[in-house]
Length: 84
Ligand code: FES
Image 1 (cartoon, rainbow, N blue to C red):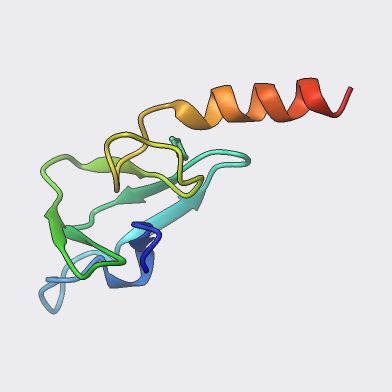
Image 2 (cartoon, helix red, strand yellow):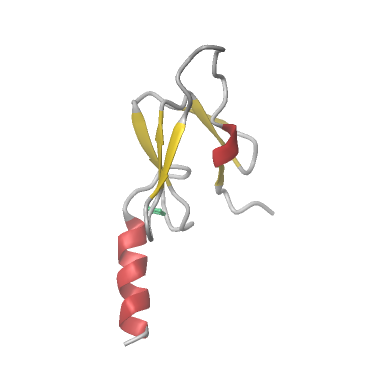
């Protein structure tokens, strides 16, 4: 069974000589990919990237996989409330 999580290591389709894909890890949030052409999810489906920067969900809570829809913020608030 797949989690639906993206394979951030396969932001592929790059041509030689192009700028590398840059990945920024947001604390308690998504991965921000700059310069990717596509994101391959855990089921092997390629999701074309049409913007310069995209946010990829790593929390598993998004309704728009593989893209972050902001649900991580709600999950973080719930986790903090449960720990207080
Ligand atoms: S990281 Fe933002 S919804 Fe999962």
